[in-house]
Length: 362
Ligand code: CP
Image (tube, rainbow, N blue to C red; front, side, top):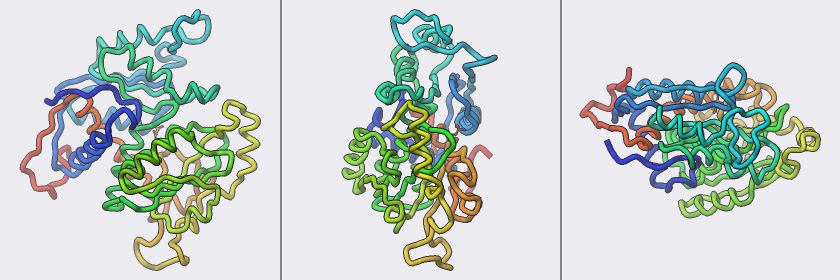
C-alpha cells in the first residue's frame, strides 16, 4: 500500500503528472498489466442528483477491487438533504448540515464521493464547488467529486483514457468541443473538464459555441496555459464550420449561457436563437475534402452520456462507426478504480501475466 493522496474535486487539485499517472494506471488495469486491491476499504457515495454511469462504475469498480460502497441518495425517500452555508438558520429544505454529515460519514468510510450539480443561481457560487469544498473541509477522509457544479473530473479522466486509446499520442491533435442544443440549461462541469482533459494531453482544443455560450474565461485561461506547456492550445470560436474543419475528435455537449446564468427565460431565448444548426450530423465528422471510403477517415464522436438523441446528435452519428461513447462509459470504471487506488493508497501488483491474457478480473 502507498501513501494516500488528498481530496480530488477537479483537475487543478492535482499536478498533471499525478493525473497522467491515474490514466496510465487505468490503462494497465484495463489491459491486465496491473491488479489493484482496496483491502476491504469502504467508499461512501453521496448523490444529490441522478446518475447511471457514475454510480454503476464506482459500485462495480470498487467491488472488483475487493472493497465495498455505501450509496446514499438525497431527496424524497433517501437521506437528508444538506445545507453547506455556515451560520444560516436552517429553516428551508435541508434538514442536516454538511458539518455533521461529513464528519459522521468519515467514521464509516475510507473516502467520500459527492455529486452536487450547479444550483444555477449565481455562477460565482457554483464555480467554487460550495458543497464539495464544504465536504472536503469537514471530512476526515479524502473527498472526491462525482460531478460538481463546475467540474466533472472523473469524466475528464475517462475521456483522457479514451482519447489515448483511440489516437495513440494525442499531442497536437485537434479536439473540437461543440455546444449542442438541449431543452434545458445544463451545467458547465463536463465542458470544463473536457477542455482540461484535452489540455492535459497537449491537444489543440477548440471550443465551438454560439456567442452567448462562452465558457468561464479564467478556467479557459488556465487550461490554455496547461495545454501550451504540453504542446497544445485552447481556443474558442462561434464559427462552427471553421472549428470542425480538420477535427480528429468532435465532442458534443450542451451547457448554459454564462451571460444570463440563472435567468431561465433569457437562457431559453439564447438557446432558441442558437437553434438546431448546432445538432451534430454525419457531415460534421467528414474529413476535410468531403466523404471518404478510407476506413478510419473522419472525426471520432464523443459524448459523456446521457444524451438526447436527435437533439444533441443525430442517430446516424451516435450509432455510427465513429462513435466511441460506450468506450468512454466503460473507461469511467477503469479510471475510477485507478483514482481510488491512488486516493486511498491501495495496493497495485504487476503480475508477470502475459498482456494478452486479458483483464485479470474476468
Ligand atoms: N457521464 C455521467 O456522469 O453519467 P451519469 O450522470 O449517468 O453518472
